[in-house]
Length: 387
Image (tube, rainbow, N blue to C red):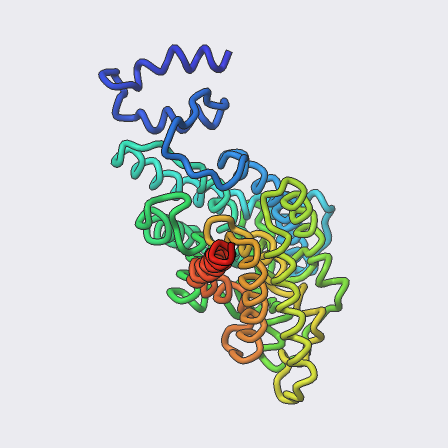
């Protein structure tokens, strides 16, 4: 029935039709609803047997556990700060009310720009923003204003994606570029202890939270020279202040299992990030930096604090911006872990570190791949000469 309806509407959107100017929009909705029957005949370079739409769909599914828990945690943190009690459902609905406008703004602005660009270039609409549009609201503080989020999304889509040629051509992870833009353009709204409470939402509970009430993340406390609150189990469950999708290690682990089971994410990259982070944190633990609280956080706590797990699972494994050679994945992931912990420890003004580490390594992923490819070429040439 859907296909028959689309077949009847298609002539109106083709060349000479009444709505031919919206051909890309129609094509985008058609490929979203049904699997297209057309296949590429020539000029194709295959990296994997799975199509991009299916990849994006699986990644969005993998993000759901972290997103749903993040919604609940928003309500939990706000009700706890207000000294009030509520059911789990009420806390979840509170978080849903906070998150829904952010998701709508992210997709509305991002997809709007992509639709306009596709129409202007007379190209198909790519599916890449399906994941980016979900990631951006999940990696920003809960109190980020909607206008600020819209500005970051527009900057990311235009300057980190479309300017390079669209989906699959970008050098940097677009979601992290949006986060970096907000961090450097509006630092007071991205860090500190006043950005983790979502006040004045539809439920109105924020109105009873005192204006002086603040929440600090464990890493924020450590950067201020205080002993981080909570323990390893609390860090794993995620019932603590933090970016919306980054707090629950258990929810992120479920998403990781989905990505690995479907073969979308590389276990080599993912595991290498944790190995690099654990080794670096352990070296700082035994390094004797007595006046540095972050350096003395146990190495295993470093791996479950902040955005380390989320970045390792959903950002470092991005198939477009990460290393593609099998050996290069080990180097790429390991260096991300090393840089993330190093930035945390040595830069008190920026205790997170994961965002900058991944963006920095995005620049070097092509070089890492080039080195491994060139090495393989040289080996084959030597074997050929020997024969």
